[in-house]
Length: 438
Image 1 (tube, rainbow, N blue to C red):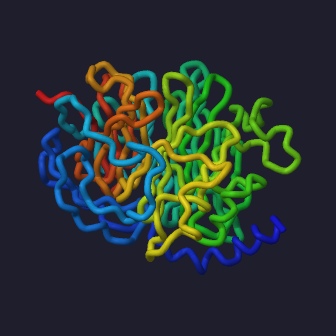
Image 2 (image 1 turned 135 degrees about the vertical axis):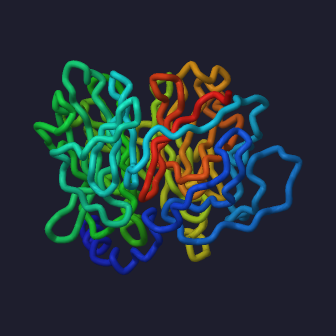
């Protein structure tokens, strides 16, 4: 029966894949100064949500940043401050500087030991960006990608021992001759002159491959010197998304791998008769933001439908509910299936957004430029065109602040200089950094 369900999903997905993807929508930037006094963009749709945003609600007593009407007000939170947390009591003064420009839909940024950067471009190019902002020619040897719609060259991460090994990991949408594709993870060596990838090897391919151009997930997070997590998506739309509830396939999962692509012996389903041994967690929609905290815990944020972007503390063997439960509704209106927000055996999100922020990229701040932000979580927003700061206490969101950027923020990373670096998703994308105001 599971094989039949997967086959039907792949055959029918093309007819159900009319949902708007992140390649669509406006990439227009803002002409306003990007500072701590910046203006709101007024947009907060999901990365793959073509619906228009909700009208602004009446202003409340300014307890939260979000005052607009919810898309799904009938889906009530399970506990206090699961959404619309208070504004922090204190923050920092900041401004935005441009570091590099002329990048085509940059997707991820990674720092090298000398402070320079590797930046992926979704169409399938990898660039080196110097500390002076100089952008290199494309680095040779990048795997072939399916760059339609949301697909392409996605995340990049350098190995913990990069200074001696020069090993990098790349996630991408892997194409096949029959028109299907899947999320994949490659391992390679960056040449000494930083002009090419050598010894490129695909060490993991999501199963099954399907005919879809959306919801690849694709964030890479190192757990330690030997293992990593790779996030994935539900591959967009009914019926294939139903497979996110079936851990005998990789749809809608997080996988945990050794650096050679093999399975760690302590993965939660290693001894299970049917569930795939790579799987760490399942029941996810589309995870495009992930980071590990100082305690070694994996946090992920996934796109919701209309409403329901979720922050999850993502633990081994857990089911995070999609599409059986959700705090959002379908793009065209109406509940997702039965309209449930809770079910036995399924985890609650730590936090959710409605309207959504369209999350992509996140990092726990560990720099020394902003003392008041130490340990806080910073999350990129695409159509919301902002960075969201979350203050966490005892694994709950205690406060939320918006840093208005005026451009689609695809990735967020703490730099070696203590600034917060961003890449903007546009045909003429930039590397930006948030620094203390003068």
